[in-house]
Image (cartoon, rainbow, N blue to C red):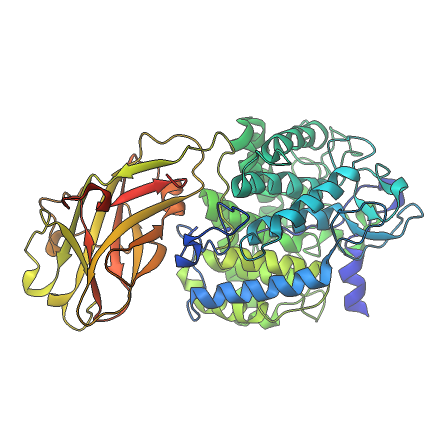
Length: 599
């Protein structure tokens, strides 16, 4: 009973401050595999699973990527069946995420909130490909978001969803829901393009500008809703969706969003350093300048508004995603500190995390909740020293099921940890289909052949042979992407299979992006090959001579800043091999290419 009370009270929107969304959960991240070689019928550019491997971020390593994908898919199916609804008699075709709220809904029967609407739109865009109806659902969620526009700023969403036409346009906004909705529109643009029924990019831009108009304060913080003051110093850290704000900057080029990010990091440090120096935590609300925790019962929300409670519980995910997707070291520093503290607090057992802590680290409750546990697992993905914690946390998360708030936020964390929350592009003009020819390629062979060069060969031999390096062979490819400008939604290496080795009927092959571009095909040998581990990218299986394989390398192409980009191509199964055509092949159509956006 007590647990349920605190699960629901956190969304309390008080009558005097309609539009305050009491809590927020956010979201969660590009290494595609062979599952992605064919987009679904809906034409997704980034169909699930994307399997992003973020630089400097670990994933659970006690289960396979396929297992993680299956866990996410299964959890999504459960979540969708329980919370995603389209039964509004007052808005046929409108979808919403059903969630509990308490407080005044102005005489209407509340069914959901703008918070839930935003979560649902982010999740649906990321799960497209697994869910063949994702775009239809997404458009229905957007229909509801627009119909229930704010009574103050019509470019934003009112915080309550109710099945009555008079509820549409009747409520003011809550900052968290609008941030997620605007961000989801950027994801939708990257997923489906903006030439269909809804111009997602145009809608995203308009909503980003509306958020700036109503929610960015004079001191570059975020206020609580369009009913709140532009001079407000109060802010809710669970609204600090830093990676969302960077996506807003990428779309608009508006420096305001970078200024807001910097201001929020400053406020976080002021509170954490002075009031949570040993834990790295932050309170549910902050006030004043320099920032400090809000007092108890702030805005009549609940007593623990000055502690790490049901709002602030979501912050570690927001913070770590800024580091994972955009590389801001400030995010890593905060996440590391929190992770070290919580591991010590629980003796390394994620199942011992409880729902709420004082800023000094004392437990408030004795029960667990995914909205606390899952973000504290996500925070620990910044270091291999946390590997056992992340592994145990994943096992806990995939089986955690409770109510709307916990389950939705848990799913967002699962998307991030499994690498299925991808970084959206700028939203600018999508690159037309382009085909980049390989500029250098070769393979290397170990053991007694370690000093031999094969740069002039017409084939690239791939073979995994851990038991005898003399038979092990891997290839290297180099492309120049300087001619490509704009948003890249898809990048795949296309390789022609000349033949399979006589003992092989299928040869799984994977690409790894590598930072070393100094090697040359004429001098490359096993003895001087790039030895960095590289960034794991897509895989495919060579199963017949005369066919092509496609290795999805979208994430590495998007994240690598240089013009020349390099890859290692390896076999995945011991003692099977294949011969792939090189750039020296006499048939031009068989030579390796990098296909950009289907080019």
